[in-house]
Length: 502
Image (tube, rainbow, N blue to C red; front, side, top):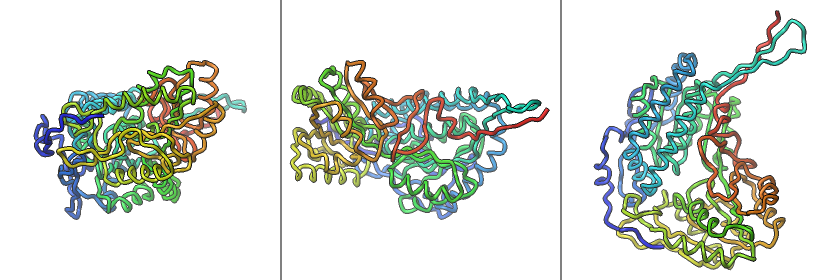
């Protein structure tokens, strides 16, 4: 591991380099207009790579959100009547504008999330792919004709949009988590009210500006940023307001449970993509070079702040030492620094509380006997920020928090195992099940292990499981519902049966 160019980064200087400064919005977007909160209050957003102020954004409260819900409800009456071709045309225009403005969108994303600029550019393309995909899927929402058990009757099945959707997104993918949800909802004929994470609201607002240019009608897309203080009341409004018929949330399992409980008061449809604790298994017949390369990306992308990143790495005892050496050699090539600094491949964590959690898990693991073989500290840089070195550990107990809970940070514990049965038992011995990965060249083992892992997504000989065409979601306490793919749009549709007597 090394430091990037480590030059002095000034947040506002970097912000001034935007080509289209109108993409940097600080007001909420409601009913097709940019509006302040009724209280005129704002909240501060900081650059996690410098801890400098990036700007102040309108702080919408529950009353403001109610107004946005009313606007979405009015718009739904006309938007649900549009043809699939019209919805597809508008969504394709939005996706094209995202790609055209990729560089500015990536700069905004890096400034508020700390993500290295190359990763941010990739996220913008990833985000646009969902808008394009669901625009195409809008034209493929098919019904059915069911043979009737009665003479002289016919049964038809049709799909209709559920209504207004309340959407709550996290800070780790400020653009893609919005488009993966909003694209499906708008394609289905729904309207939406989005509450982006208070750490990263600017990407959501920039997307609104482009949606407005693409011709998405007023009230169809509404974005209501709010501070940490207003988050509970805003969440309560989105989950209990009777005009909201669907809630989609990505975030932690405890908050997902709370939102599900609140949504039950009006029996809303819910999609919840919650926490993970992904196992990454390397069998003794694996391509160790490929496995090590994929693990670097799977574990340390976005500084370990992804819900599907490898959290527990299990390596067969026969190849353990060889694999650890290969992996460390690759991790050493990562360059820590500000996301806009030349050469950075590993940026800061987004929040101080996330950084403190990483340090706590590390200290408790070491106290229980774990050995730090690389990293383990906050690096010395010329800028302030939430930086922590990519860290590799061995001899980690299965009972410490690092093994039992989602870390959401750059800690990589590597465990030994002796048999397929043993590693499957350990991999599945958690309450969550979002993603899992393993490397093997045994075709029989590939099918056995893929089917036995208690997760919603499996990567076999790859550290990647997500694209716009593949269903994304988990089992157990990792949530309900699926996003992306042909299944994602169904989360925003009601199925209606029509019985006709001739």
